[in-house]
Length: 197
Image 1 (cartoon, rainbow, N blue to C red):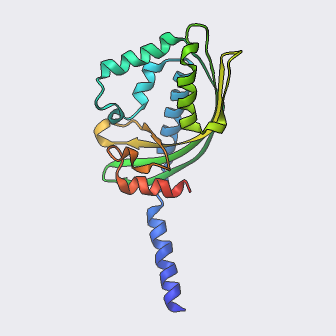
Image 2 (image 1 turned 135 degrees about the vertical axis):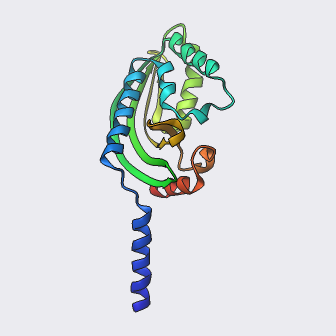
């Protein structure tokens, strides 16, 4: 019996050490960044969104080409609306040296309204959204040029000393946690994958 109590106590201690509650300052900073991210998204300011995404996601692309891509999205004039955005849990993950990480989940409804000029992109957009939210959560009404998507997303917010004081967004897929190991340490990715189960 004593052996089981010791094992239980060690388990509680180790889980207590792994749990990294976010400070109030960090939580407020992340929520403020996310609010600004949503604001720029709703205003179709795609070039400004680049400042919220972790820079390593763009390695292999010059900042000029990324800016050109953002400008192209604006020129396509696809009306994007985000509704019913709900912020779920915001959990601290184990810090690594001076770098901090937080797992967040959000749910939202998206509406993208196309027009005669950009309707040719409908299939490409629908397939991309199905990959993000699941095939059953995306519909396209061709008569109204309206794409709707409902779903939940997991993201990891990253604050690296080398990047300054801001938190940066990294998309996170619990089914493929190793996809971002060039940005986030494997230990943190494994912890995040465990917390999404």
